[in-house]
Length: 555
Image (tube, rainbow, N blue to C red):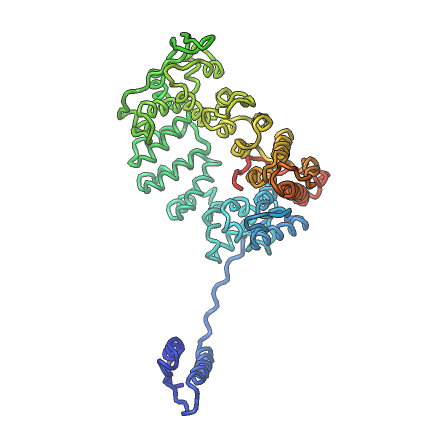
């Protein structure tokens, strides 16, 4: 061969007309044919001339996984769920038809399989890791199901490196080895370090705090913020000295987070300082209100005197000096003082009154919205069900506007699960579904019977009102994931196509029937899926419950 491989590639890229190959070919030989012949000969020569490479060392075997394997039916189900994910989930916008959306059922299936303590079939591990790579909401349960083999595979495939970070490579064997934990903390990737801190926090909060202290001053501000946020889990008075130190941090965001965490500890020194400031702003006195017939009348109420300045000590304790646009400075400072004050302060301040009695007191000079909104934030931060219950009150009457102070969904999240479901069920029965989406998202799954029936009844009423089902697509998606499968029979009667009403929306009845058929099919499928994971259970196909926990409002 008269030409180098680089010359042949150059002629192929530019064309034999522009760069004829430097070949010894006869005058009648086509240059393109000669080029291809030379490339073929060159390829064989290159391959024949390669020296055999030394065999690489085999990877060490994966750690054994002693957990029981999935039952046969559940293995097949996982394969179908993962295949549907790869095929696009069965829905790409527009009308969804009557088929269940398997992609939305995969998270629930993984959570249930993890709860049963199963191990994933080895043949499905690549697909399972691909699914977890594409969807971060699957990672915790998917990696738990995949077990130690997932970390082994992630060492061999760069596309699965996320498993090493999320799974915290080396943590399991290092859990009893302080030196190995310290080495991972000092040398690991940032995500590995965050996950390490979170895991240690779960079973040894003191060790996690010591680890964070060991490198705190050398960390970047954004990293300090993420590490500090991990202290929310298992927050206790033992964290107070470190958080007090963080109040003087160089980063404003770190200082604000430290102050927020300290205010969630009612016994902290910061909470006491905030309570002293708030007491100086709020007192019992005579305020004007409306008496009988709308006339002004004076009575016992709450007098507010908001602060006139934000001094350096307040800023150190996390009070932001500059309000957002459209907010007055005094109201902004006042709200921050009150929402960081322990709620028990107000019982003593108002002569032993309980939360309901305090909230019922009139507030002078139009300060009630600011005061009540701050109490709402405090109730959520301090996880105080008595105050959350009092601030929520009963669901508004039918004729009353839905205008609760604060975020009802956040207040509901503080209440016990059964009380939360009962409140939302009564709210839906009174006001329908238009304001209930976020509230449904914080209710335990599966929805309690009264709540599930209230949702289905409200959907039925919306259908009879002549609207289209896509106006309630978010709630319908939640119902598919969160309704108890035992409620499938309640949905069956709604799957028929109703007669068209003269004043109704054209075709709405057919669309609603399609949506209810999909809901019914999804409930039955969920029941079957969960029964497959527990083949020894005597439960009927429509009876198994889905994993407990708050519903995700994502659709």
